[in-house]
Amino acid sequence: MKFILKKTTVSLLLTSIFTSYLLAVPKECQKIKDANSMDGLTSKDSRCLALVIAEKKSETTPLKIDKETTLTSVTASGNMIIHDFNAILTDVRDIKSLESFMRKGTINSNCTTPPSRAAIDIGAEFILRYYDEKNIHQFSIAINKEVCEKAGL
Image 1 (cartoon, one colour):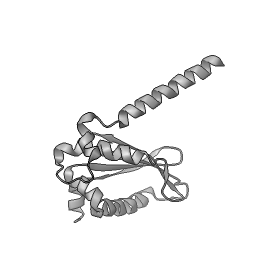
Image 2: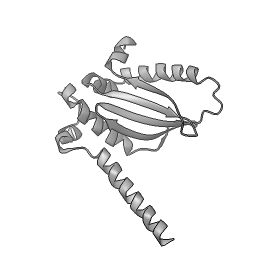
Image 3: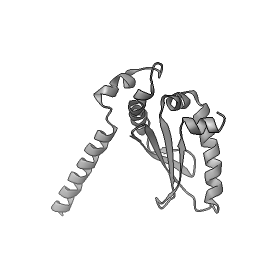
Image 4: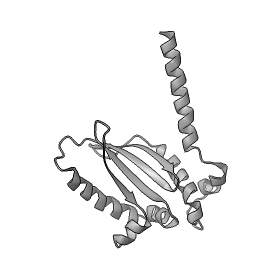
């Protein structure tokens, strides 16, 4: 029993260290983390901006969005800010229709909300991944400058 408990404790500690490392903002990104606005940022800053946004948003996860949807994590990879959602989809008969509805609303929201749009214009890309209650990936939505422009936003 002691061995299992010790192994579990070590595993949890390593997971915690690894997660902290992934979300820690590197020194070269500190100026963006300390800034009060995105003024003056360029596409060269998009990687750091993604890290800062993911770190800030991950502080509030898990976050219940509505009775069916929970934001479970926010991470960054390159210039991408990846949002993972878990949704109760047992009553949904047509995932494609739900995806289309969600895509339209999410693109509109991210492309027209000033902070999100500023990040997109700098070169950040929002990736929203939706998983069902069994944690099986159902669909993803990518939002970047090209998507916003194609939508006329």
